[in-house]
Image (tube, rainbow, N blue to C red):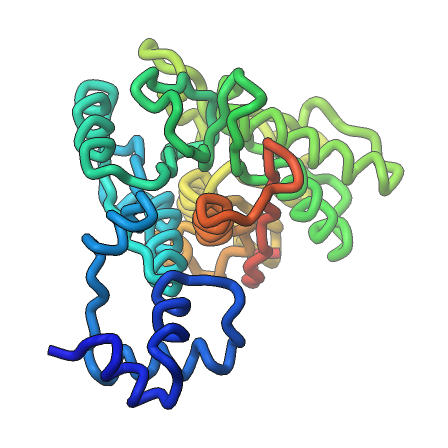
Amino acid sequence: MSNIKDVAAHAGVSFKTVARVVNNEPSVRESTREKVLRSIEALNYRPNTSAKMMRNQKSGVFGIIMETRSSMAPAVKIIQEAQHYARKHGKLVITSNVTEHDRASAIEQMLNLRVDGIIYATMYHREVEIPPELEGTPMVLVNCFSKNPNIPAIVPNEHQAGLELTQRMLNKGFRKIAFLNLNGRVIAASERLQGYKSALSMSGITVNPDYLKYAEIESHQGGASSISVTDQVLTELLEMNNPPDAIICGKDEIALEVYLYLAHKGIKPGTELGIGSFDNMEHITRWLKPSLSTMELPHTKMGQVAMQYLLGEPLNRNQYLVDWDFVEGTSF
């Protein structure tokens, strides 16, 4: 088994330099760091993490707690990117998908492992109550926020997403743009709608309230649980005396329903009616023809920013907004 002196000899540096790289100290030149990391990989060197932990009281392990019932949820990209970034810096990430019923035990297990910090993430953008077990633990919220403004939170910039998507439609010549929104209790619904209204106002277009519809209504379960009424509101829109020439869908699932409705009516999306959306859920978008133009949720960027913060990079504000990217298709 290789030791630190073997790595130093292989890389042509001192063993102290190897130690600084292993400890991720910033004083090492990037070219030297890369050379040492290549030698570590070539020799399959494994630092003695137990000894390191005893010296600096750090475990080099971070935890991610994700409130979701599915390991395939789109928000899992937060975990993937945080793991990738941590690995590049010699850190280990352990993850746990939880519900409200098993959250406390998952937190206890992580704290018993002496994690250096925790990313607490949710499947959709919402307010959360911080579990009391996490008090005193370095932590950052992702895709969620707390009433306590002192707890750092990294969230998607919903307003920017609504603004940019609407502006792109306006730039393509659409002027009668309808909005099929999410359940009105969802934070994303109100903030994206404000972005839509801002874009219209900046272009001198008055918002037509008849073009604003909710494609989802709250179910008896309350909260974000919703019932789709997409077909009903589409019928209302397209039977208007002055129907829209484009539709913004609150999420890709709604866009899918719109495509199916239009196919049934013999209306071609992209040519006869512009369609735009939010999320870029690849298991939906890759099957749609014409390809869907959509704003991509910045899960990957949020995961990276969260891990950067836990590793010592400050945020410029406690609620850090991450912009979305536009994925261009041919639907408008």
